Length: 204
Figure 1 (spheres, rainbow, N blue to C red):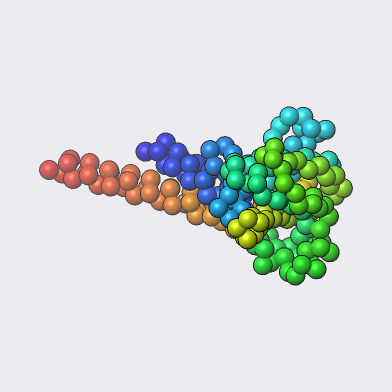
Figure 2: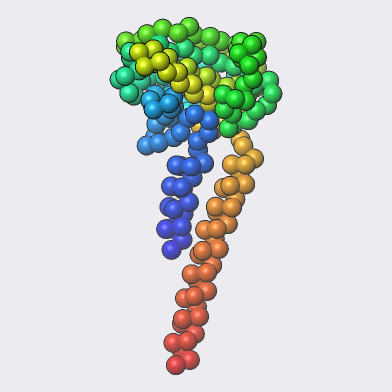
């Protein structure tokens, strides 16, 4: 029973807790969603961790490479731009486009910008040198020009906190505590019912 509870908790955490912003961890992949379209997000710091991959948070200060691969082929026919925005307002792990302020605010707080263009190869990468720890927000804008639609996805991330997959988030910590507590309560209830059943059998 304990093993079943542990498996349940771990599987639930891997699908729900390890996700924030526009990025979700599914089947060992970091997936970014822009409207109905999906991209695969991967990060590297080859100068520090060689070929080790990370998802969302960048563990060390320094040069980092972010790679976005198009999962949906339709994206190859759309123009896409990408920017890294400093989280000057400490928005947190669940930022939305509405939290970033006006276009002027976004431009002012942008530390890196990759211009919009068609990328028929189905992927692109950016390299940026983070000189100090901090919180940032990645922003991907997809222009579906033929259909006259625009899709924007934002994903917050931390830099330099030594966390390879997801950053520290108090709300996430409390959620984990509640989840584990619920599992322990369930285990205690089952054990109590088993004890009562045995006592009844012995009494009869």
